[in-house]
Length: 97
Image 1 (cartoon, rainbow, N blue to C red):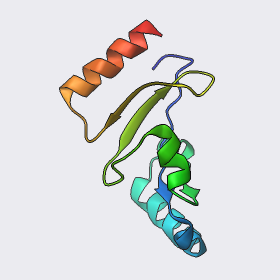
Image 2 (image 1 turned 180 degrees about the vertical axis):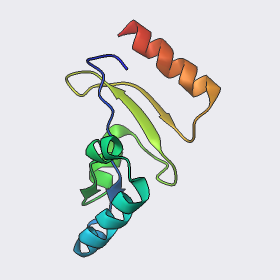
Image 3 (image 1 turned 90 degrees about the vertical axis):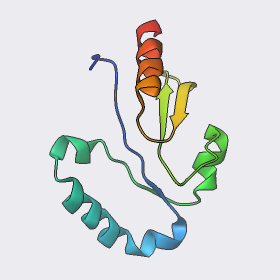
């Protein structure tokens, strides 16, 4: 991984579930178990649309991968599971930046 490249996993959970935060976070931590992955996982509890709408995320049933620049501008995005094509596109964008 490039020295300036940072990876974050950001599960977004509706505000309704905030009272269950300790249970949900504990369950995720128990499932993940890898400290370096846990350190880069930032769970957001709040209005899901406040994050998905500005980022143009229409399908919330799957993952979205975003490549951002240092200012937070979206340089590339992909929704759905891993494919060779999406990996190649991301790799090409990383080479350009």
